[in-house]
Amino acid sequence: MEITDIQFRHLNHEGRLRALVSVTFDRTFAVHDIKVIDGPDRLFLAMPSRRLPDGRYRDIVHPVGPNMREKLEAAVLAEYQEITQHHSMEG
Image (cartoon, rainbow, N blue to C red; front, side):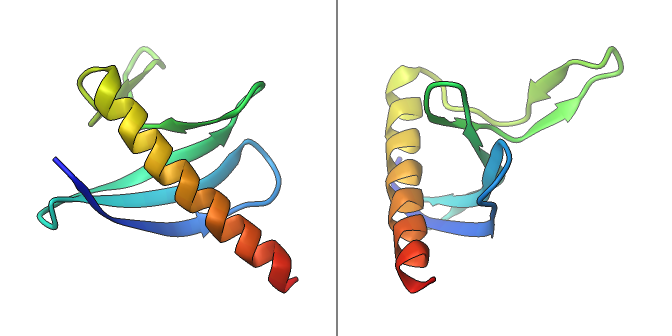
């Protein structure tokens, strides 16, 4: 499964939520509302989730296994870095 498109729908320069992202796989399957989060040590991705009745959250979609998670995170964060560097050079 290849990542064929990454679209940033919302960018923040402050706070923990830095971006909302839509990712398309194989030009046929899209996942919306992936979050780029500014964590204590690094940026990371949070998958779309829903709140359960007990207050916990459960991912709606997620990579199965560490290899796909690493591939997805590397691609999205590289694109995020490129976009935010481009925006900072414009401003």
